[in-house]
Each structure stands twice: as C-alpha cells, then as structure tokens.
Amino acid sequence: MILCCFYGLASSGRVRTADEYMQFFQAQSLVQRGSTTVPQAVHFEDFYGTYDVHGQPRAPYPAGQALMAAPLLDVARLLLVHFPGVPRTQQAVFYVQAFGAVLTSATCAAGAVALFFLTLLQCGTSIRNALLSALCLGIGTLLFPYSGYFFSEPYTAVVLMAAVYEMAKCERTGSRNSVVIGLLLAFAIWIRPTMVLAVPVFALAILLRERIAGWISAAIVCVLPALSGCGYLLWNRMIFGRALEFGYPNVAEMGKQLNSFHTPFYVGLQGFLFSPGKSIFIFMPPLLLALVGIPGLWRRERALATLAVGLPSIYLLFYMRYTQWEGGLCPGPRYLLPFLCVTCLALGPMLDTGSLKIRRILWVLGSIGLAVQVITYATSFLQDQVVGTYYNANFDYQMSYNPMVSQTLRLISYLKGQHAGLGLGFDRWFVFLHQLGVSASTELVWALVPLCGLALGITQLRRTLTRLSDGRSVHADSVLQVSV
Image 1 (cartoon, one colour):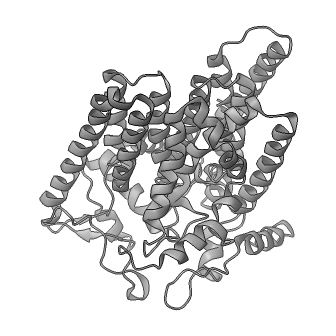
Image 2 (cartoon, rainbow, N blue to C red; image 1 turned 90 degrees about the vertical axis):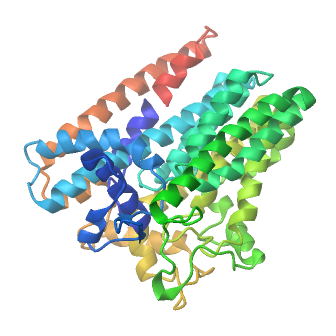
C-alpha cells in the first residue's frame, strides 16, 4: 500500500516519447474502439509505426501493455475527465486520460516489488531483511522513476517477478507451477517480444535445480511461450503481411536504421557498465552488493541464482550489439531494468548471513540510489536529452552524456525560480495538469486517496515493526500489504 500510493503521488502522470505515446494510443483505441489501430497518432502528427495490409496505422508493439493499462485509462475517461475543475478542452481531456494510464505503471512497479518481497520470503529470508531489500529495490533503483513513466519496463517487471516467485514457491517445480510460469512468460512476449529470450533461462534454472527429474516441467515452460510466440508471428502475418514484420518504421531521425545489430559489442558493453548516462551501477547502486551475494543465493536456491545471473547476462549480450542499445530517449539502462530486479534477490540471503556492516553498506547504497533517482526523476529527462548532448549529429548516443550533472543543474535552476513552460520544470502530475487548467481543489481531491492510503500504511507498518521488535509473531502478508 505504502509503495503503490507513494509511486502514484510521485508520478509524472504524462507521456513524452514516441514509445509512450504509441502505447497510450493503443490502450485508448482498445478502450474506445476495441481495436489496436492508432488513427489518433496520425491525427496528432505523432505517428511512429507503419501501416498494415488494410492501410490502417499500427504501433510497433504488441497489445500486452495496452491491455494492462486499459482499466485505469477507462476510469480516467469515464470519471476523472468529468470532475468539476477539469477543462473540457481536447488537450486537457487527452492528458487526464493519459494520467490514468500512467498510474498503471505505478501499480505494476509496486506489484513487482511485492513479488520480489514474497520471493525472498520463499527462499528463507527473514521478514526484516526481505523488507529492507524490497525498500532498496523500490526507491533506490531505476524502478522508482519508471513507475511514473509509460514505458513497458514496469509491466515486464511485474510479470517477470510473478514467474520468478512461482519458481521459488516450491523446491520442485510441479506441472501446475510450470504451467503458471509458462503462461506468464507467454503473456510477457505480448508486452515485449524479446521476452522470448528469458524462456531458456527459466528452463535451465529448473534443470539445474532438479536435474533429469525436471525435464517435463522445463519442457512445459518452453512450449507455452513458444506457442505464444508463434501466435504473435501469425498476428504479424495477418496484419503486416509477413511474420517477421513487427511494425517498426525502417528508419528514424537522420535516416538511421534502428532495429539492427551494428553496434560494436564493446560500445554497448562500455555503455551499460561505465557510461555516466547508462551505467547499471550508477542507476542501480544496490546491484553492487547483490553481485557479491550471488554465491550465497546459489547455496540457498540455485534456481533463483541461475535466473539472477542468467537473465541480465543474456539480455546484456543481446542489447549491447543492438543499434539503439541506449533505449532511445529515456533515463538509464531501461532495457535491462526488469532483469536486474531479479539480480537484486541476492541481497536477501546476504543480509541474513552477513554482519551489521553489510546492512550499513546496503543502507548507503540504497541512499545513493535514491539520490540518483531523485535527480533523474525531478525534472523532464526528455527536455534534458533533446537540448543536451544525448545524441550527436548522426543520431548516435554520446558516451559523454552525464545526466547527474546536467539534470542537477536543471533542478537547481528551477529551485531558484526559473520559469517553466508546459511539461517542463518539476515533472509531476499535479504541476503538469494544473498548467493545463485543472483546478488545485480537484487535484487535491484526487491526491487524497493515495495520501490516506499512505498515512494508513505507514501507521500499520510502524505497528507491525514494533511487534517484530517485541518478539511477537507477524504474518508476512501483513507486512506486504501495508509496505508494498
């Protein structure tokens, strides 16, 4: 409850980039027309995609994220836009609906942390250490800012963590568990098709834990996503005319081809590890301690350790040669975010077996991570990257781009009173919507729901932790409900 309400209050509440707009248009079309075509993108002259065999504009993404976002978008469409104090202009109505859709990212990010917490409990981590690890993941990593954007990463993360949790629920993966894992991975492919690469890692994790006895479960985990992948290719064949046509435009800005693998491996590797704008260690500092804890996780639960190492490794190998390895206009290494959340599972066993010094180190790393996320999230990354040194004249990512410097300076200038136009300045939903004309009293009414939930959750969490300090038994679900 606490984390979900906190994410909702802190959300940017708006869409900025082509990736976010096209996902939103898909969700809007599903709600209003029951279709995934995006004619409104053409109307707003913000179309990124291609036309299908019937001449209809299509986004280059499957409909999984749009399906998950549709319920809250529908709430915004049917309820929020009709509140007193909301202007009836096309622009205001559009962005209030987008606000509802973006809140789904907050729900998914909080859900991913909840499943992370439950997974640690399943592998024997104490409630206190599982709670501390989940807190560091929730506010000390890139998951925090992405809870307020409309990229696919929070949606991928929650489905992925659900599959990981199902893996951790029992020592032997039975047919029921393998079916659930397979179905989750099958759905994940309809959020991001590259999730198919996660399937062999899950199968390997089962085989390493159960050896020959697990081959049936491993086969089930592979077959269900394979069928889903074939269904997705058939869908492409029906709407685009070719199975391997995913709807991406051939070129983007400056005529650059995006969906190819022409990047030298050392460029992507250097970027993901050491560049100030995309380093996994800068944007996820707790990862430094998690990597040290991998052997301890292996000794406790080798299937989870296999996932914690295998998932980020296979996606690092894939994306470091991808032409647009940096993820386009976005903060940090977004492509790797869902898989690095799994790596952070190694924090739990390390805290259980480590000294007080280990706990203090994690607090320091989590605090550094929170500071990084605040700098990343306080002002618009899009404004910083468009006017800064993010891309060169050839549309190639600049390794010298340092958002910790440029966005800190931008934040300081706004704190000193610099004027901010629409969508600029402090990048929060209540600032942005107020600039569109939504009244402050209406925004306060909307904010009261998460504010009350936040107050109630903090109160209950304090009581629960007091009971733990007194040595009284506490059910893990009670900690989960109020904290996450």
